[in-house]
Structure formats: structure tokens, C-alpha cells
Picture 1 (cartoon, rainbow, N blue to C red):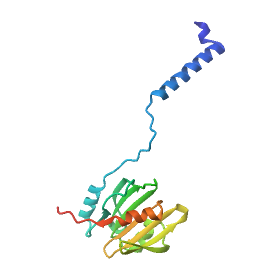
Picture 2: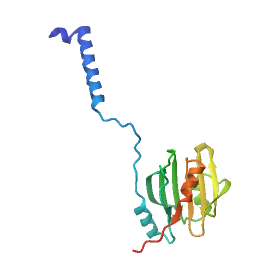
Picture 3: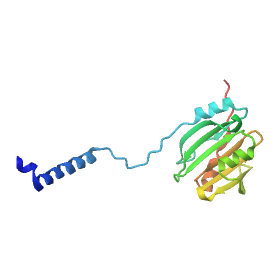
Picture 4: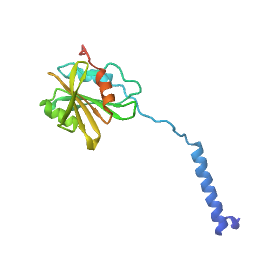
Length: 178
């Protein structure tokens, strides 16, 4: 017995036993070969937001193919204004978020959400002129739609076609009746 526990031979046996145990552990441990992005339903968040604001909330009529809604929250913005965030992993696995609020001043809200005050153009989506903004150092593209009662922002690392795709699907939701 002493032969197995001393010297180089004992060291080699112990090393092989440890490597075998580690290999066995890796063999029986479940492995995940695919991505896992948690999917979160935002319908209750949109309904709750709609109850607290004096205007109709905007939300996608449906989720684009391959997109995963993965975050949603209601936050408090400047001056106590309610701000709705609906986040997505896009089909190309970039990030996109829809943000809306009646926060004033509109320019301040849009600048903060876009991380930029530089308008680089406009884009017509569903007959409405959306401002385009781009912040190169953050690879952040933003579409801003200032309306009389609410400002809608679509922003993220997604490319322009993907941001346009989700903006095209935005519709005003009817206010819930208590």
C-alpha cells in the first residue's frame, strides 16, 4: 500500500484519479449548446403604464420574427414623468429598446435617451417623420418621434433597418377601462 502513496508513482496515480474525476464530472454535467435569452411578456407592464399616464401608450402590434422581448420596466423620469422601457434582443442579436414618456422638455428627454443631441437626418415611418440620431462611440442608433402628448424613442445597437422594423410595428394601445 505504501508504494501507491509515496514518491513519483503515488503522485502520478493521484493526478490520474483527479483528472478522471474531473473528466467524469464534465461528462455528466448538462451542457448548453444554444443561446438562452429569457423571454418576458410586456403586456401587463404596458397596461399598467397606460393606467398611469394621460395619453395612449405605444407598443408593438406584434413582435418581429426572431426578436425576443427580454426586458420591460416603468421608471420615473425628470419632473416625476413616467417612462416606459421595452427591451429586445433583435433577430441579429443586437439590442433595441422602445422608450416613451411625456417628460418635458421633449428635447431634453430625447437627448438623454439617445445619448446625443445631434440629429443626423429624418426617416418617414408610417407617414410620420422620425428624427435619426447616431452616437458612434457607443454604436448607438436612435429614432425619435416627438408627438404633442408623448415622445417615442427607439434606440440601441441594432442597425437602421431593424430599428425601422420595430418602429413600423408601433401602435397606440387603447387606454384600459378600470
